[in-house]
Length: 95
Ligand SMILES: [Zn+2]
Image (cartoon, rainbow, N blue to C red):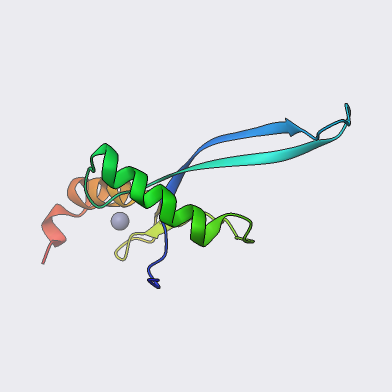
């Protein structure tokens, strides 16, 4: 098992009815993992098997990652957003 943390983007947040209880709901959050590279169907299946083994039934915490600009302190939702900002706003300051 690796210590590498899983990262992804929250793509879905919704309500799920509790079985047999009409007015009772739970909140469901769907996270799409960020892969380092595209994978084919077989690789994907293997990863899903591994994640099921490692994560199903486990308690997890979900919190947003913040990408902060080291030069001006602005916050971004993604690495891409920060990179874009660095290119546009701090081009001259690039090392
Ligand atoms: Zn900045």
